[in-house]
Length: 142
View 1 (spheres, rainbow, N blue to C red):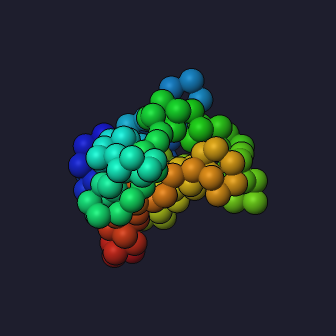
View 2 (cartoon, one colour; view 1 turned 180 degrees about the vertical axis):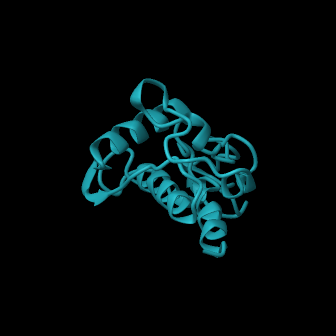
View 3 (cartoon, rainbow, N blue to C red; view 1 turned 120 degrees about the vertical axis):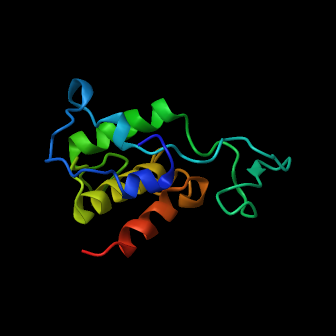
C-alpha cells in the first residue's frame, strides 16, 4: 500500500492469497506501505536526524533506506524464506488480507528493515510507520 498507514490495515475487500501476482516473482510493491519518513530530515550534525515517526527520536540520517533498495532486500528475504542477512529469522509475505497475513507482512517488513545491511544492522522501526502499523494490525479483532 502506498497510501496512508490505515490503508495497510483496512485494504477493503478481502482477496484470496496470490490474487495480485507479484511482478517477476517478487513481492507486490503495492503491499509495501510507504515509510512515512524521509531519510536525512533535520540532521543534527552528528549523523542523526531528529524526526522519526515521533518527531523527537534520533534516527540515523540514512534511514529509512531508498525504497528500491528496501524492496530488493525484501524480495531476497521472501525468496529465501528468511532474512538473508540474519538467517535465523524466518519470514513470509502472504498477499491475503487476514489478520495473520497482515501480521506476517508487517513482520517481514520490520525484519528486512532492521537487518538490511547485516544481522541487526539496519534501520530502527521508528524510522518508518511500520511499528505503528504493527500495533494497528495487532489491535484488530481476529
